[in-house]
Every structure is written in structure tokens, then in C-alpha cells.
Length: 176
Image 1 (spheres, rainbow, N blue to C red):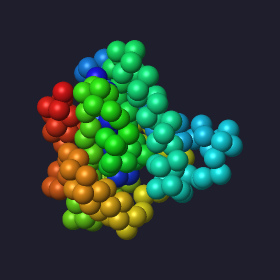
Image 2 (cartoon, rainbow, N blue to C red):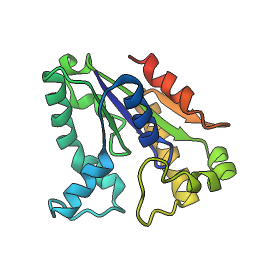
Image 3 (tube, one colour):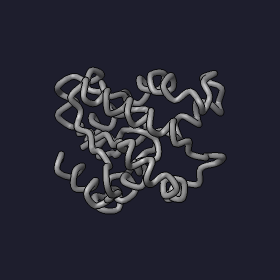
Image 4 (tube, rainbow, N blue to C red):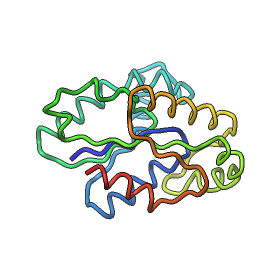
């Protein structure tokens, strides 16, 4: 089984992937690491600031990685903001039978009322270098992902009142 965890920045995708790995034993990959590999090797001129462009530049590589995992009957969790909402278009039915996805976003009210918490927990799993969350950018990013998920009928977990890792885990595990 392949589990895709997409969505906006700073919603807890990496933390969720880590906890799912601990519970299921499925390994996970962070697409942030793959992004940095492409940037550092010079395979792309895109930068860490080019999230939207990077999503579509990197996605064909991720698709082939996922297909290989399915073909080898391996379980894998893939997390990152680089999974497009229209991800299903990249796979035939034979692959789709082995892939589940959940996107995570935050409401504007949640971001505004919990912004200091978001900044405090930005390094919950990985140490982010020079990562200072920008409130308006997070609001825009969450809104865009929510709109894209609705347009493509992709399951989307919205953090509105309370951040609950357990509720997010239940949402992912219910898809399996």
C-alpha cells in the first residue's frame, strides 16, 4: 500500500508520516529531501522558494518511484507539499488500487489563532534551516490546496479548532 500525505506547509505532514511509520512499519519519504537533492545536484534551477513549480517539475520522478514500489509489492508513505491534487491522473487503475491519499490544510481562523504554535512546532521532526513561517503565506497555501482538493474531489482533512495528530492518523488509516 502506498499512502500519500499532501497539503499545505506546516500542517504536520512529516510528523504524521513519522507516527504512521511507527504504527504501521511502512517506511516514509519526505519529498522535501528529494527536492533538496535535485537542487543541490544542480538537476534543476528551481530554488527552495519555488514550491509550486517544484511540485510539477518533481512529480514525474515521484510517480515512477511510486510505481516501482507498487510493482515490487512494497508499502510506502510519501509526504510533502509536492503532491498535486490531481495526482490520480498520473496512474492507471492497476496502480490506483494500491494508492490512498489524504491532504491536510488549516483554516484561516486556525492559522491566525495558533500562529505562534505553528512556528514553535515547525521543527517537531526535522530541523528546518532558516524556516520562519509567514502567516499570510500559510493562509494562502492552505486555501489553494483546499480549493484544489475540492476541484479534484480529493479527501482533505481541515484543521479548524484543534490540532489532533490522532484524528489525522484515524483519517489516513480509515482510507486503507
